[in-house]
Structures are given as structure tokens and as C-alpha cells.
Amino acid sequence: MNGSPSVPLAGVPTIVEPDDDLPFAVALAARAGALLMERYERLERIDHKGARDIVTEADHQSEALILDAIRARHPGDALLAEESGEHRARGGEAPTSGRGRLWIVDPLDGTVNYANGIPFFCVSIGLVVDGQPTIGVVHDPTRGETFAASSAGPAVITDSASGPGRVVAASDKDKLSDFVVSLALNGRSASSRTRNVRKAIRISRSMGSAALALAYVANGRFDAFIQSGGLSAWDVAAAGLIAQRAGARVTAMDGGPWFDLGHGPAAIGILAGPAGHHGALLALVS
Image (cartoon, rainbow, N blue to C red):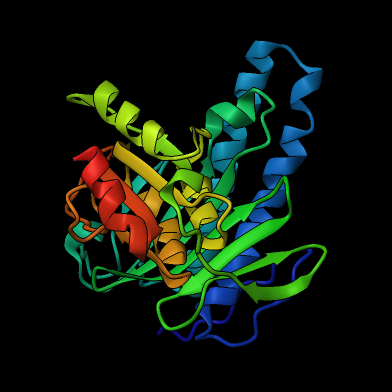
């Protein structure tokens, strides 16, 4: 990994180990979340047009903060961001080539929720190495919670109350009929497939932030996450890894690999849930 010194971040611990990118990403997501919250608290006091301007500003400033910090620490890494798109690596390697190190960033997932004062949105930062997710961080600034994982370790959650991260695990419910599922199906026969799922489970929800809902699979708040399309790499790179490292089985909607840089924006579908029930869920939406 690049040996550039870490970037001091106001209000969070300085990262002193140059090769330890997970705590760097955790601290960076927390700082971006603090920026979002500063503006979020102003939204209820202004009119609709002014609120829209604040949301746009917050989104762009959060992304700039994250990208600037990554560039300072790892100037040779490629970047893929929800707002500004692709940023080539030093040497001209395309971000979606599947070679080298690529940071995938969504500075504000759940923009509509944020704009309307609904406290369900997040910051998502993922690191992909040679096409494989290796670090994932999803920070929920309204709850002060951060979900994090690396490909070599467990999924953890950190919050302002409990301090250091505690290991989390995906749902271990025995019965599909007890499941609470984040569900969003579209395309051909979406209505009938949605009915199939709803008949088999306890209840479904659609939350408006795919990254945060998928991260919720990691600690069992959602027993499963199903979205048949409309997702992009910045929605799933971090959260999919976190759910996987928590013990969930994560796949594409056809049961194949869930992460592929070859998919363009809004072209990804994901099914994540307990390994023992994954096949049954997949059958319901096939």
C-alpha cells in the first residue's frame, strides 16, 4: 500500500499507521457525516428551494472532503464517486478496469430522505483491490453508528455510546415467516414476485438508502435485503462486504457474484440474507 502520511481529521483520532486503511476510512466517514449533520439541522428552518440548495451543497462538500483526504493519503489510487464519477489512477488506469486500488464513494446515500428530514441516510466508503472489495465502511450520522469490515476480518459496529467496535452477525432466525426484509423489486413481473415474498415473510420495508439498509443485514435489523436492480457500485461496494463478513450470503439476483465493476450505474441487483434461507428467497424472486 501507499506509504503517504495520513490526513489529520478534525474531531476524530489521527490515523498513525500508514497501511491501516480501515480506521482511516472509518474516521473519514465520520467526518463526512458530521458535515452532513451540520447542514441537516438547518433544513427545517428554510424553504423548499433553499433546502434543495443545502442538500446539493452537502452532497458535493461531503464528496470533496472524502476524495481530497484519499488523494492526500494515496495519490496513486483510482476513485469512483457517486457525484463526480471516475477519477483515473496515476498512470492512467481506468477505475473500472479491475486492476489496482479503487476507492468507491457515496458521500450521501439517501438524498431524498435527507432533503425531507427523514433520518435514514449514510456515508459509504469502500476500497476495491484488483476488482475485489477489501474494505467497507457505512456511517449513519443520525445514530452515530458506523458499520465496518475488511475482507480479512469480521464485521463490526461502532457507536458513540459503546466506543470500540463490537463484532456483529447476520440474522439467525429459523423461520422465513419471521423475516423483516428490505425489499424493492422492479422490472418484469415485479408485482407478482413482490407478492410472493410478502406472503412468505413477516413484513417488508423500503427505506430509501440502499447502502444503509444492506448494512443492516450485518446485525440482523434486516433479516434480508432484496433489490432487483437500480443499484450502482457506490451503493453496494462497502455494504455488501460488511453483510458478507457478518455471515450473510450475498449474491446477484441470479445467484452469481454480487460485485462486478463491469456493471454500469443503476444496473446492479442484490440479494443478501442468511445462508440457510438464501436459496428460498432467491426462488421467490426468480
